Length: 231
Image (cartoon, rainbow, N blue to C red; front, side, top):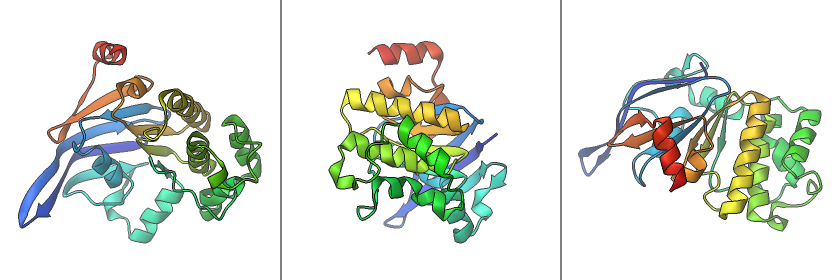
């Protein structure tokens, strides 16, 4: 099991009043599995990803990544986890403008000591960037920049990929292409994928679908998933 959340809750203090965002979130994600986390805007989807990535801490409950309870890790250990075991892909590309495409792709892998030139070159070709490695991000389209962000994450060979609306800034056709490349490349790397999305179309591409509502999650049935995708 790559990821396990057990009765996770999260609340924030607003004006001295506790506001509950998550109240009882539990689910598992195994190696090679893909999972979509859906829900209305403000339902706490991104909060779940931030907790798993160690960017925030739960109010209660346990989060295990590769069998390690991450709330027990120091900030330094969490940063190391994010560079290696867990890869995060945001809606904003977060590329380094002063680095070439090739250097951006290799950046995280070099930081965590996992840089493999052959694997990096393979990813660049697999995701259609082999002819753009010497360019800078500003010379690329939005879809190409998101491909760089995906390749950068995969270059470090993470066991778990967290994707927060990774195609939200792209048109529908480009989003379909980028998501397919992400899932195919993740499968090749043997990584599990947890993707936050508001798009039923994109969620239908994932192996499982969870709905976050009123602070808790429920699994969408295959029949429900099919009906939603057809809408």
